Image (cartoon, rainbow, N blue to C red; front, side):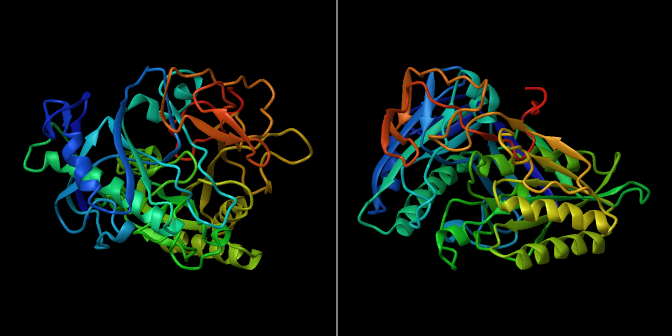
Length: 435
């Protein structure tokens, strides 16, 4: 596969009477775009607001963030499969991207109707939380969107995310027919066979078990070509990931994070220099029995061995029992002779629990990417972690629920406990020790 990625830098976003990209400025005709969104009768709220780096702004609640991308050559569409989009295999031809911005989906629609999950992610554009997350460095066009509350949660999810993707498509379409100021070609050409052979293993949470839904009808998780249920490991060409084959949010991660995944990009750019990048093996986590978990780990290691891998980078996007699949994948790879490096966040080391749920001797190469915070809203703060300062402006809901059972209402713009930052893809440069 050969993919050319054309970048159109966005240095400013302005509201206008037309929508176009010109010389680094994205003009947005909010009235016309939102009129198209409201053509879906399920949508009850649709507004656009802008958040710039350094401003005293908090964006909450965030469901996803999307970098507008469009296929201009080659099969398929950017971000395939999700919300009924075509599922043609992507990763070839040419894709245009609006770089330096994101379209942020701001909505209170719950990810599924089984309980136990609710929106807790927010972005600050200044202050200590902004310093920790890459989204604060972007121009964020915030899409405030809500759906008819009389609909099922599943239909509400489809309505608001489909609307966000529609806007992303419209913004990306401003680059069609233009020559990109920046180009980069991604192609896994044959290289020196003596170079170490490496695979990338992103472990992706599935909400199937917690949602109680055995179909694909839930949201709060990354999808692979639109599928988010538990499934066997996927072998993907890295170009597919760059074209959005893995999309959707989980915790702090978003569609933007995966499309700009620094682990994948670094492996790709070093291909043929000091390593041979073989591809991506995407693994689903949160299986319900140890039999299932072990099976997935062993199959993943087997696939890596069959691909000829000598090394693997393993990263994950969740917490709790999903770590069992992750750490057992590391062990299975090591036992197959595939050296595995684990990129992981850590849990609060207070109490009797280890910082890693199940430390195994095979996991002897670990990169810590934990920035202390509170894992969930309402939990006690980690020692030494200060409250986040208030913001002058909130884009989204002015209040939020907190407390042990979400029975307390607080101002979302006021001082807040910092959330735990799951830096699952290596955007940050702080480890737990350095902090």
